[in-house]
Image (cartoon, rainbow over all chains, first blue to last red; front, side, top):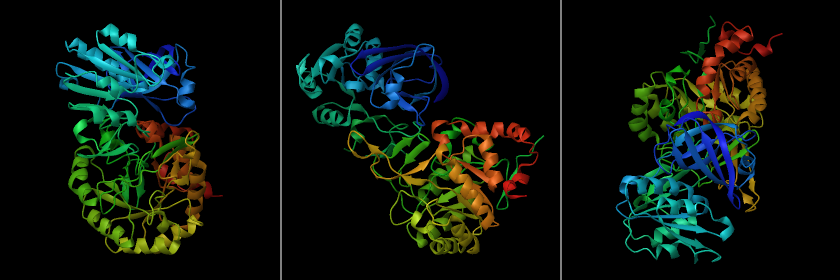
Length: 244
Length: 305
């Protein structure tokens, strides 16, 4: 973990309630896709944990959803704004586990960390299939970017306005030869994905956090391997250890 | 050159800064960030006889002045703390640590304290009779002078180490509770623990925390802490560890003027992981700004004249 100042270079609306925030500065603490950063916002006591969508040496991309007053305030941040950020939080996904045909399953604002993961898997020559679930067409984002990486994309929308009508699990049913699963999304989706998953895999969880770096025990969960902190021992848990 | 040393129940601290229990784990998350030996000491996570998972999540909410927590004393239990946490801590922290103890019965407090009494690393036992997030224990003992005295006596009987009773701002008369602890053999008191609060989720129309209520901490609590430390200072002659919303070196000086011998820093650690390091580093300059050469001389300074 590192505490650093990052500068906003872009804060752009991508879809209904969904924004992309690009920040420049020291990204050296970020070591794996699926990690997150914790942003200090003026006027709020707790920081806002946001998953890393992608990063390079010197720039990090976050995609966030407006869920409350904090994220609403974030939409007004303009280029040049300097943010106090804790970076490189959480364990992230383990790309070495993927096998030759990893299946990525994301729902809504759980999709962004899967983009950074897909990019790194593609770079290793893996055949990546991504099932991306949204409520409706107006909320779709990142689908083109996944395609541009060379990933095979299956879209599912709850209202059927684009792609399959249904849930990500309906999309998963169309993929038969995947070697490993990586998933991130709301807990109900994760649970359904767990039920539909025929391989081993890694699941990225969300929880209200106090600190984001393992000190406060605010985001604890029980696993088959003992109590874990979503922020420090997660957010990514192994399929085999999850207790629903 | 200013002197930041203070003496807390017979043990000298390089400075009065003590990260508060529950915000600093067993130390090593922070030891990865900075050399925690620069602290006066720290108070480790509230420890009980048995291991506890604590309350269901969500356990954390916020308000304009800080945060609410309802962790519910998650800890691995005293035996695991002694077998695993203390040996790990020994590698990164070379000063006496403050052991924070919670319980659900007088007997449990005494048992846990007796086990920790045997640990050379433990300098003080901070006995938490004010946790608002568990039922049938914790704050029930801190609300009433008689119950507080009973816990103090039971712990006194099993240890010669200094015992510091951690008091609740919910007590009807916190000065009376402090006096009862002193009379029963306490070497110090620490205050204030968190104050029970609640937030309601507007979308679900239900309390935001799974536990319903949670303890409020953070800068919004600071004036309450100053007032209570000031009142308790007038009621007892044992040292006070003052805490509640401290975020700056000036806050440390203010709480000491109110009567604190040492100062806990809690919620601030969670949003500003380096805050205690910064306070320790800024303290000499802040002392110089207010004409303080010897920190120990200002304890209770606001009461004179």
